[in-house]
Image 1 (cartoon, one colour):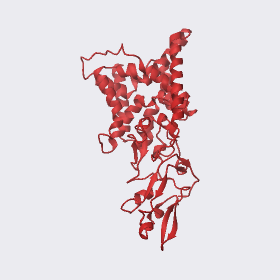
Image 2 (tube, one colour; image 1 turned 90 degrees about the horizontal axis):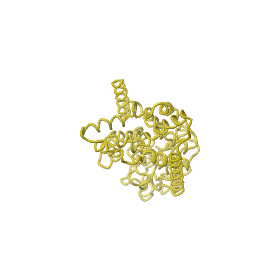
Image 3 (cartoon, one colour; image 1 turned 180 degrees about the vertical axis):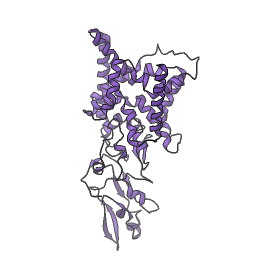
Image 4 (cartoon, one colour; image 1 turned 45 degrees about the horizontal axis):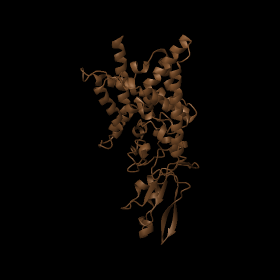
Length: 391
């Protein structure tokens, strides 16, 4: 039985790695983080609805009532990785029993924050950390670019130092499974929960709700010049709902989605942002809209995605060849799929001008501009819905 369980866990780990290196289509990338009941429940409570993705985690949640930490024992790729990491130092002792059970507080704070619309700490979900680690290796790696891999790396180092510490003292997903099993035992004995346990749950949810409400009200403004993926929820909720799993980064065929390394402050660290060039947000691509496990990026088809304005192109006339030099250059107009660049006759030539009521901010005009110093640049801001345009 033990060998069978190990074989099953190894198979899950291999499949998770293969999805991470994109051996399978990007549509399957969402499956691993979507298996986490912690992510799914926090997302469903925060968004006030449970989509079809919620069904992925239901069997795992049900099995957690049957056996304590069933997912940890049979499926979690992080758990197996940490188990092997703990064996690197056979003489190391598992001195974690005196450490506080922070995992249950992270769980309760996350659920409490979700009640206020701003779930906390979902980026500490182990499946998100695993996916974030895998998102680093699909492009040339730099020291700063490898930052999304830091979470799992730190957990591995902690487990080498103190085996089992993460799983039994810090993991919010493990704590959720323990609570599920505890509820089942309480129901079987037909006895109410101990007062101390109920008080802990109440205080944790209350503290999480207060913190989530405070954060939700404070983080309500625009995001400056940062461009979020199409369909991203409002910034006041996005930085909490985003699990930093890296699915959208790996799914992007144009390779223009990157982890934010400080442009939106500490609250937005490692959340996805778009950087135009050499690719752009193609009107024929909605891969990032298929893979978000928490609905921080809405699930939309191509027609819906084409109605979303992720930013607005700004034309700098002092750099534009047509406006500055009266040269015949309307490349941006010729390439614009949304017909958002109009022509104005000036100094004997047609000159481009952006219509902000139509522009989607896709960035194609920016990537094709032939000026030595690019004359048209997409600026971010709050996303908006625009009327459909025939492509």
